[in-house]
Length: 483
Image (cartoon, rainbow, N blue to C red; front, side, top):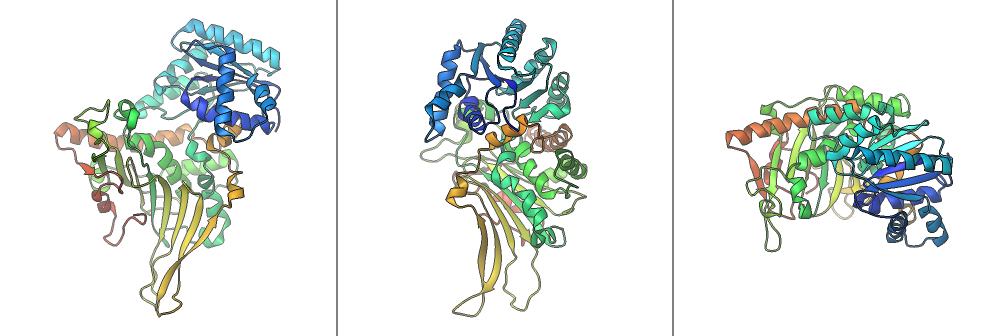
């Protein structure tokens, strides 16, 4: 598909996300010809910018992310950008925005196609969606909306937001974006599972002991203390990134690779997600906060953080499903701030088998998502110069040349929005189930807080989180593979 006609409106066009991710990604898609002659982008925000100033910002964003560019191409691309100073709470501004969109539609022969991107603070999502509807901003062609995370703060707010958005857009035209689903190794989970007999034939509770997911961040909350203290690790990372990964690992094989079939398989799985009771939360979940050091603040002393905060900067927990290929297999996860290093990693731990060598270890399949992209299988082999068994890794890794071809997650997902492929986006029924799980944990924690006895582990910065997370495993022989 080439030269897709469309008018794209970015709410938050002066923001950091637009500058760092959206503008460079759109330029790459322009160079590939996906969008070219018949598109225009309207950036909106409260700042009093001009068309020319926005174009300068777009050009700067491209130069900051590309080593070499054709300056004529950059100039031609930037000429498609227009700016509209816009207060999202002011109805009259939507009238002006609608007029500009129609003028550009006529100028660029965009065929009435509209793409709306919410790159603003989540508290404005509902307001924007409502006014897109009541001021009739949608066009006569296709109308699609991209919504950044977080989609709601809990199930009730997510349901309200969904109601406001579906007043203007059909479910199939709502793209709830999670950039993790655009990452190369996340997109490799399904091919790895379904095309390799070696792996496909052992993807069951008969052979898999447990699965472990780690999303480790090196940094603390830094300047985001005000936002983070109202969110926490569970809402910020588990409700979206981690549950997306869990679903891909546990879902049954779809009948084909169409978006409908993939989402049908996910929804079939999620019906069997076990929602934890308060007793199970106490047993199977750990929340923690990082302490300070000689050079860093403790979480409770970070700027804009309540000194009595019970918000977690670390969470570890367990999920299970009652159906699907790995029904009954525990899936452990952990995520948090100020780990020893930044890393996203999945470990599939296979069960031990009886063997004549005795000391052989279990085999593990490891998927590293960040900062490296690789898959390796840990196997046993013979030691060369002495009796015994040694461990070796069989590695699937990209060359440097291949890595240069891997697109950024936003580029890949924006491409999918333009071509109307929702495979790597979250449907409402999936998101609703994620929130039901998260709300159950949050409610249990809130009751602990109200009773005055919250169990919040304190952990030293730049290590692997609180030791209490070692206690969530079902048997004493299990442990975190990544230490």
